[in-house]
Image 1: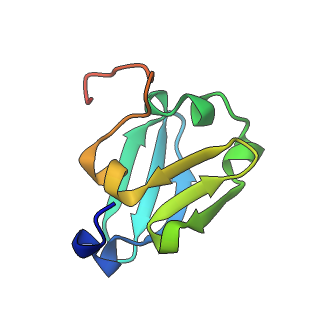
Image 2: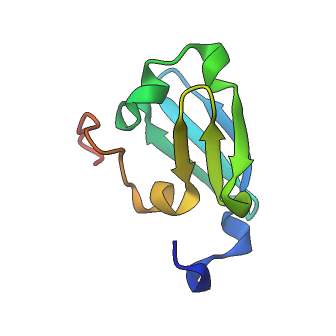
Image 3: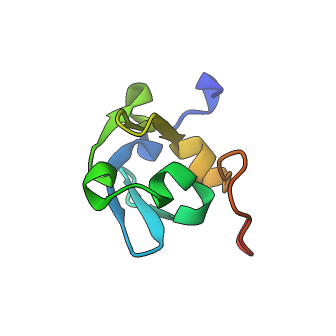
Length: 91
């Protein structure tokens, strides 16, 4: 991540899940939604495991220790699926 491009508003405020998507609320009021198919570890996780997230990366990342999964707001804003993820039309 290029530190000169970081915007404090792009820091994680909250994470939730719909039936088939991850939803990330940012401090600046925006909401990012991405298909769970893009993140196989989250797709196959239990609801309890998905709730086990914590803010990481100085506020610009999300970490699931039990799942060994990390996402960044930068990647979510770019629409970058995890390597090897199922490609969807939105990708």
